Length: 184
Image (tube, rainbow, N blue to C red; front, top):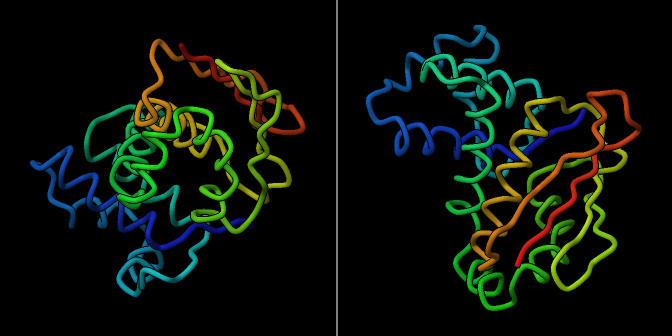
């Protein structure tokens, strides 16, 4: 089963505070199982945590925010790229444009996931394709986080009139997840 960094879970907490300030974070945690609550309390930023805890926290946050879970996950993915990406890297993406963001996708992926590979191919002046291969675990919620992350990354890089299509998905029976991005 795949893992994400504890930094992702801590970023969810920050996302909730900033996007949904009316929500009491303790109520989100109460929606988790006792075991998940204990795991969350023991988090250290440099730890890796199972995807299950990550998805459970996303689902609890969505429920407490009265938001559809996949919309919540996309919003979180966008928040994460804007909030958790280091300043120097944000500047490189901004000045390097969408092409640099696309080329660095696997490095960004490795920052958050211990499984799988984010492989970018068919890179053209105004489009690219990306695949997530060999991932252990994950699920539809991860796909939604990734969609939000890609969209915000393109926005951060200065892409205009962009689109992201999730044309192949492991959760719909395909062998891998594939995304097609286009921008002007």
